[in-house]
Amino acid sequence: MKKYLLLPAILMIICIVTAFSGCTESGENGPAEFNETSEEESQQIAEAYVKNLDSYIEYHLTEPVLLESMTLRSPYSWQFVYEFDLVSEKDPEVIDTATITVTVIEGEVVDAVHAQGSRYKLGMPTGSMGVDSLLKKPFYGAEIFVYGTVSDLEKEPAASFKLNWEGAVLDVETVVAASGIEDIENGDWVIVTGELKAGKENKSEKESENGNETQDGKTPFLLAKMVQTEDLSEDEIFSSEMVQVNEEAIVVHEIPGNAATQSYRVRYEIWEDDLKVAAAEEIFENISPENPIELRVDDVKVGSTYTIRVLIRNMEGKILSDAEHVGGFGEEKVGQD
Image 1: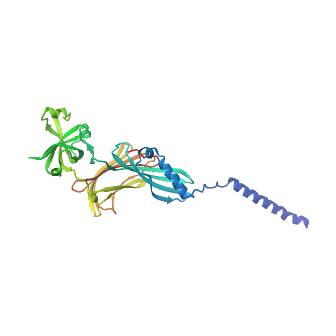
Image 2 (image 1 turned 90 degrees about the horizontal axis):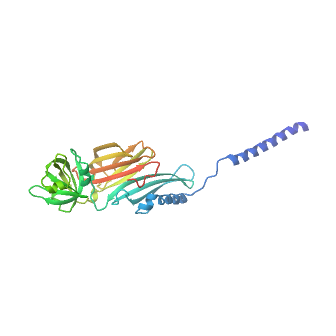
Image 3 (image 1 turned 90 degrees about the vertical axis):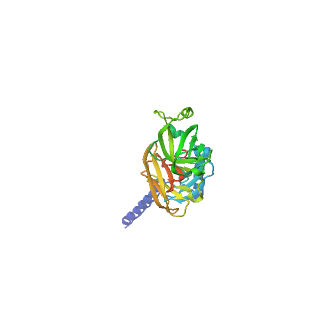
């Protein structure tokens, strides 16, 4: 009888030892303990990351503002979206808005997505180019937008003036139906919508000294159909919002100030690094604050910089917004304009 009772006892001891051994191995080789960082601590880490960016330290105008915080599926993981204004590195008279999405997991920043776009230009009307840029690389046969200051204004018998920028001078003549010409005076900043022509003969030595003549001895001039001087009213101002920046797409919304449904003429270019990948002019209909103009770049490449340039006009041709947005996924893009 004793012989038969001994076997169950031995089996019980083996089971206890095995179980104890299994528990010990689980403790040694099991998953590591989590760094139990709170949401408040994670937010402080994200904000410190933003404030330590070179672009923030050197160019910021406002403190980072927390726009959104999101709890992720992983334990002790959050995303925080911050925004701040900064001076553009490319043009000190331009104020940009940077939006940064920071992912913090267990107390460490593991990813940051940066987007930056122009908000407005200080003290100067917007436009596609200055007179100096146009004369260095004349662009014929298409509608263009040129800015500068007015001089030598003559309103009778036909309106004409000189457009000046950075030492360059361009003659401007108007078509009969040109709008806005009655409101301008010498010294005004203006945006001129028109077409560059190359058929004007030099009239004087002074004009030749400007260095504007083409190889056939003729001086280019701008035939204007609209001259814009007035400030935009509140309902004409557009605001911009980057609503998505990730590996799937970059999406920009241009939001009108006018609550009524309107149609707008939109000219845009999309650049991937130094390569233009799309350009078009379209009419966007039924646009309102609830249904903004949407521009998107699909299949975003990690590490590439994407630039979206947008010119918005009303159906009469008046420029309402001239903006540039820069975004990228996977690398710091703040400071690139």
